[in-house]
Amino acid sequence: MKIRVTVSSSKTQFIFDDVFSKLVAAAQPIPGFRRIPKDILLHIIGPSKVNRQTIEKIVNCTVAEFVEKEGIKVSKDLKVEQNLEDLEAAFQPGKDFLASGLHL
Image (cartoon, rainbow, N blue to C red; front, side, top):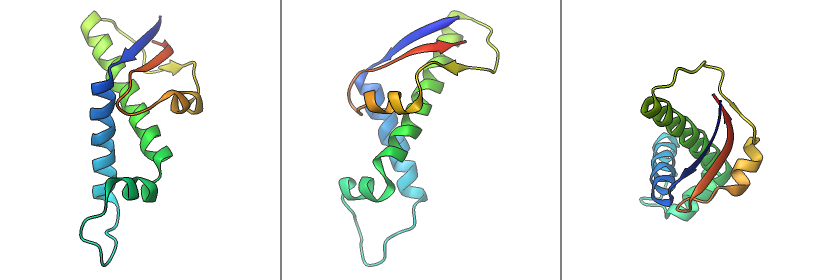
């Protein structure tokens, strides 16, 4: 079975913020700084790292929700036709996100 999903802008922003917060919490504190602006932290951690982890979480959550909603039994061998670089190029937090070619 092949599916195509669109994830809402509010959900992409929520998941991005969640992933980013967890990465910030796991990062070593920078001596001498109390509070670092979000854009600087994003630069330090790396936007690609945050985006890739966000995309993986979006795909996993969306497929899990779809499978549960539809009552479908699937193998653990989920495949995505689009490569991670293409997905990352199309991803922007706070914007609708389309993932197509998900093979269940």
